[in-house]
Image 1 (cartoon, rainbow, N blue to C red):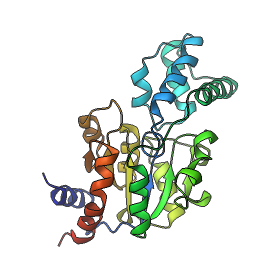
Image 2 (image 1 turned 90 degrees about the horizontal axis):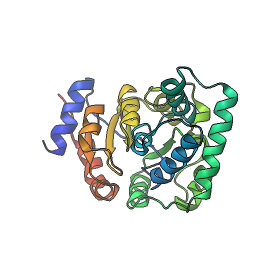
Image 3 (image 1 turned 30 degrees about the horizontal axis):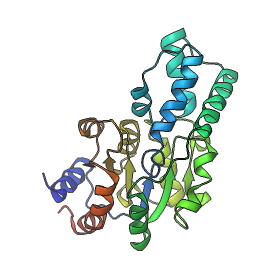
Image 4 (image 1 turned 90 degrees about the vertical axis):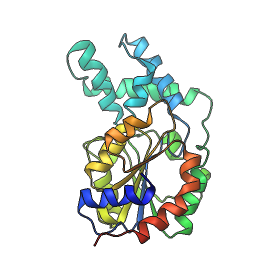
Length: 248
């Protein structure tokens, strides 16, 4: 199925006439930054200290949900209960410290070109992350100058329900002042894809880690690219195809 057919399939499914992207709703970890390996290592160190059995690849699968949700997932299957608020604060703080102790991460190859294309095309950029860690959020302006502004950011502090709930992307659209047919979401993990799809947005899945293409498709991505570089190179044509593809 070519790109136009995938767009048409999305339009039929959502009963949209057209997608006119005014806003790009962009995930951070694993999308803008090649940071998921460090996150997984930090989570594993904390989990091992707390005798919370986990596999490293699980943290890639759970990427996008809030830290509290990840801790509760570990607690439920180990202790049969949610963590207390105090436990969540202490364990997430410890995980954050471990993340900061690891070598600094770099922007994902192709991410800066992707953002530059959106800027050149006049598409608003909204950061939509399940993270609350300031270590990367505070780097956004240095690594992506002029691309994101504080009022167009949605973090774990802005929502009650994290991904895969649609609230993060609904809040992002509210901040950008757009409807689902006026947005495009870029995600690298199934939970994030599910969140954006549930919010009604044309969702691009980008494989940047160990998660297979099929998992992104099963989560509902309208189209999947095998790397951020591939997506960045394809983005100008995708935007043109979105602008020129409409249902009767």
